[in-house]
Image (cartoon, rainbow, N blue to C red; front, side, top):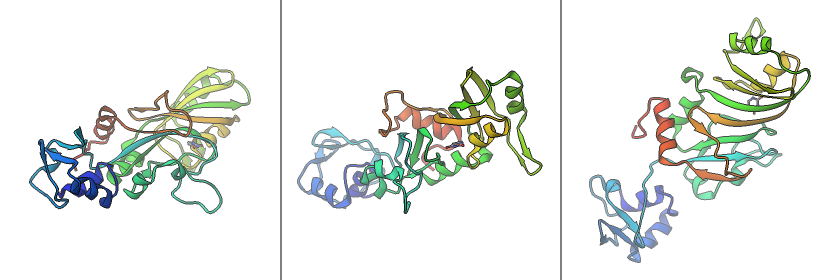
Length: 242
Ligand code: URA
């Protein structure tokens, strides 16, 4: 792959910005300055490439976690409401980053975004049964052990609609944690409605092996670290090199 493409894919800037870095002599490969943006050699991305002496970490794909605030739609564009993309730096939008699944406008918490379409598809496909965990504040009668059992055996809404087994943990009279391994429309809210409770607050804290970083304030975003990325790829039997 060409040097300018590797640098742009690593998030250093647009193609024209990284070409400037290269032409101005700020880029070294294994300690030697290279001034040709089109420079290419086998496995170039595995060499030690530095910008002004600092190593550039090459990631073909980008993965971000957001602590989604309430009020934003999980979509690229919306005619009426602000979307989560308003929080994403343009450099990642230009690289084609997309949310993995959806959170409702009033739902907060862990939202994963990735440029890897295969990873995205597997993490959202019911076939891969990725557990997602939500913290819930609800109104109505306190939950009972029989509700836990109903969720565990798989709640039936109608002959045509059945939810897969889910793990419900009662926290107190008004709050609970629920893990589900599918992502149907308004699923948690509909499951609670089916047992005569109303979800008042919904906050996602986990997707498979990925935990929401407690230090992320609402509206903040960070890149996943290498161990988080490997755990996600492993979960859906991808290597990240596919
Ligand atoms: N279930 C819901 O009802 N809403 C969400 O945002 C996510 C899961």
